[in-house]
Image (tube, rainbow, N blue to C red):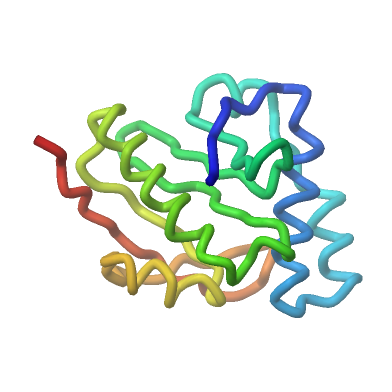
Length: 152
C-alpha cells in the first residue's frame, strides 16, 4: 500500500535526483541526465506554494508528484524511481492525484508530458490538446488536458 506525505524544503535534492533517475529509466544518455541535473532546482517557494507529495511504499520513498494550482492548473510532476516503474504504482498515484484535485477544487488540469509517459496519461483519460517546446530537451513535448470527475 502507498501513502503520501507533504514534501519539505529538505527534500529538494531528493526531488531532483528522483526526477533524473526516473528519466534515466527511459534511456536518456548519462551526459544529458547530468546536464539536466546541474540545471534543475526545486526552490523553497515552489515546494511551499504548490501541492508536492512524496510517494511512500512502507518507509521507502519511491517517487513524488506536484500539482500547481493557478489560472491554469497543472500536474507539473509525477516521477517514480526506476525500480517502482511497471508495478502498478502509477495507477495508485494517479488516483491520489485526482483525490488531491478534488480537495483543491480543481476540475481540470494540464500535463506537459514526457513522450514516454504520454500513453499512460491517455489511458487515464487525458486528451492531447497540443505540443509545447522544451528548451532543455530541444524538442516538442505533448500537452495534455485532464477533466477531473468530481466526487459526490
